[in-house]
Image (cartoon, rainbow, N blue to C red):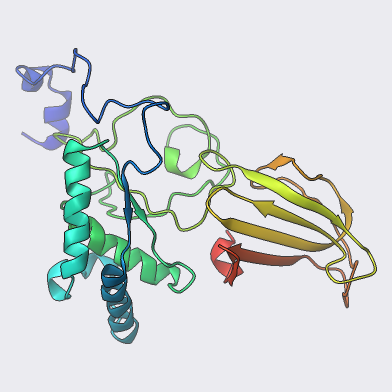
Length: 271
């Protein structure tokens, strides 16, 4: 029987375990009040960081497609220990983990994607994400309206409750997300921490937007500001009109990214 036939054949589902009908108990049953800020958090320690730096160094010298990478090809004892702890948290803890954090200020996007792929395999075997066999791909709001052929991972439209990979015989045990940049809308909001300046000097009129994960973005040389300090802003919202205030040779938008107070490559944060 083909997979599609098995899915559509009601008799093939007889005897399958029913939907859970009793409450979860233990650490996995948490709410906002009972969840501590440290629950599920696993820091990337020095030894694991050193191993990943070596992986990045090797792959920069000898590039390979991400899906060909397997942990067995690298020396990763500290990373194995870290992800074993992650597996234990998933099985007996709150049911989620956050690895805090990969050094994106030093890694490029391709470097980070390879590291993510290797770490994920230390928890479980990756499976395809869609009918066409995608194993890893970007989640990005492309501004598309929901509808047939528009997957929920390319739109910010609200989703109904669902099970990922539900077209397989069983859903995956785990779902992993790697955050390359902070969200401007949704889980992390952007707050305007400063809007103002002096049109004669330095940045002229400028805006600083902070997110709760330590990422700060700065936009400068506006002619007119459209936001004020304390405003909550989201991706795509107009902050001001481009101009040439401050030290400037011509109309343009100056864009800076700072992570924990240190400048980062702004190209990683552009669509």
